[in-house]
Image (cartoon, rainbow, N blue to C red):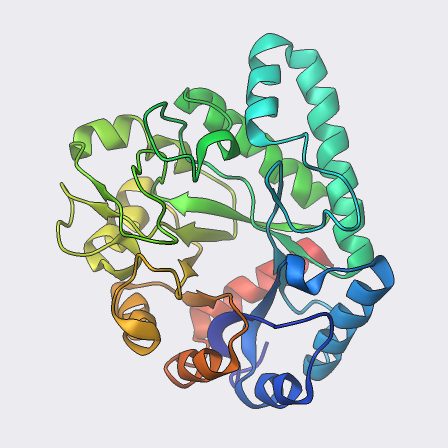
Length: 316
């Protein structure tokens, strides 16, 4: 990672890099690239794609991310079946039979990690540390381990430990907690009206003391902390994440093109950095939007460079 890299992560459109995407990546040097189902067809094809990305940066440890949670968020389903093993499954198994959970969860993480390493992907955006709430929107739902904060936190710790063992970096999400949301932040802005005291004891508690290098924000208003701005755009909430939750590593925004953020790509990007996000995430692979994000993203600072060295030590 050199001083010319910019502090954003972007997606790409298809199964291989277009000439325009290659020019874009060379010019703006994003901190990382994230892959989705649209980028996945076969093992060989993904290997070619990740190799071509790493070749541009001359860096075999260049950050390449994916959402491979299992269950309904499985980007690799064209390559392997991971849809039965969602977080809800593991949460229930943990409650029922600890010994069986330890075995099954270990095998699950080992299998996913083996495949990611084979494909040239070094970062999985798990664990989801949001609490399950029965009356909330299903956007989280069975992506959460449990409605019990202690169980979510414990499985989160196990998840981080195991992936690190298999040389995969992680992103905890959606900090400081998405579970209470009544709407899907992909399409509108959720507002959580619970008191701060309740949130600290419950939804926020699952993110405390997590040994993760990266955390992804929630595009959610927490009314009792900042009634005007969602976490991604709120310096009050980013400070709260730093001081009260105690997360000291890299904070990444959730996707800046989601409809919960209402200011357009340029201002959504600027406001995320102003609030204190270290890196901005843009996912849809729209080159026009990517150019706007890139031009409004600062160069990586010393803090990001230091953390990127730690990243390299995890994945090498």
